[in-house]
Length: 136
Picture 1 (cartoon, rainbow, N blue to C red):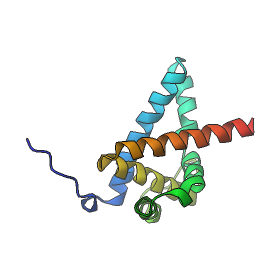
Picture 2: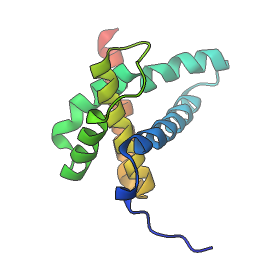
Picture 3: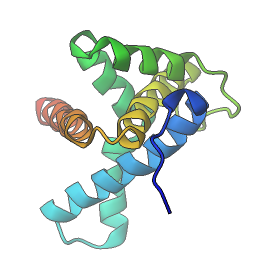
Picture 4: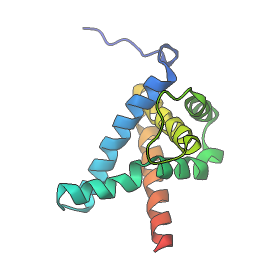
């Protein structure tokens, strides 16, 4: 079976966010597992600090100015996509911004820009952890 090159324009922006959500969650789980071998419920509580819409929104606000134009475009398309669901634990604006964050992750993953994907994710982890340290 031949691998075909992915034309990112074939994907709905919400599909990019859908994939990005899963990819980011996996990186988060790997990250917290490396730091701790606690019970699953405690690991879940730690993961929420990274995957919440509020955390993702905070990250993108910190790094938006340093992102490449193509990633800013993907972010804006994700942020501006019509929301089909009403968020439970956050306001609509924060939710939309986090959707843009997830769209960037999905885009980088599906275009196989692994180095850039990992830099984006590890920068996000650092921003979240620095914020948490400064709040303590």
